[in-house]
Length: 180
Image (cartoon, rainbow, N blue to C red):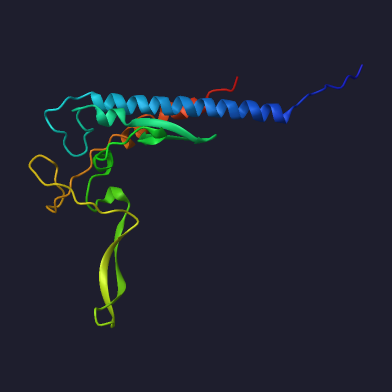
């Protein structure tokens, strides 16, 4: 007897199940990241003040409370400061990236030709160094603040990027789990 095997494949059902699996894994990943970031922020109490490169030390808890996540689109998840309608503390960005033109901002300086009009209406040209692809913010100066190049800038005390880096293998493992 020669019976033919019959295979039933329903691509719509498979794709729906796959989408649900991926969305579930994304949700697990953001919960893991948020929990890691918050735990790292409350792990060390103030004083002493944190040093450049260290996670900021716990003072009031406002920074940890402003870490949240949301899902703006079905396959997009965001974890960070003030996402999902949670109020953001204004100093969180400065702690993560520092202040001033640091390399962590991804910017670079270029000399550009700038045209301007004088009060008498004449057009003048001048060259100016501008920061491209980043931002430049001046911070406060003071002892123990991890100053940059003596220009009043504060060096970064990252807490989000290290959490992503430290959990990368856990997140990869989530997406390598078989679909049920």
